[in-house]
Image (cartoon, rainbow, N blue to C red):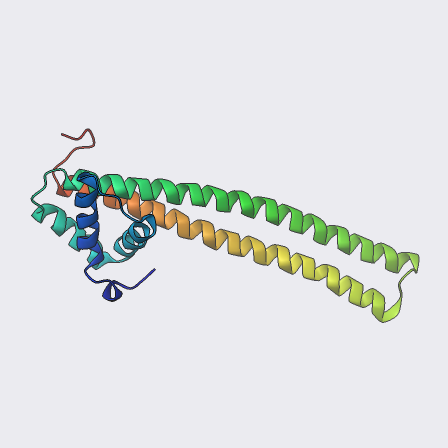
Length: 173
């Protein structure tokens, strides 16, 4: 995500311009739209600037178009959050199972006398590294899920505020 100063114009006014452009049938690159919405929802000043731009817009449907873009972004963030949750669950479970299996195998080899001394100790330490990997993968997955959840919540909240600022109800009237 780029900082607001790196855009040619404020992300809030760019989002309003994109919404107006979409309402006229123009197409927009999805990557640019996602970057701009991310910049708007992550900065308090941009959120306020968006609401002011909606109020100042001459197009009465501008608020509805922006709210629709924000809602679509929130839906995509919810889908990404669900995918991150699924990946976290699968990777975490399998990593824990593999680590536990390796630990049991190393203990079994040491008890049976197949592996002794420093090699048994090294094998046990190697199996413990599986637990470290499992924990790290779970933490990374949780951070990813939290980031997507915050983006979803921010976009949903901003969509409601945009509808209120544009004096448009959820039913479009």
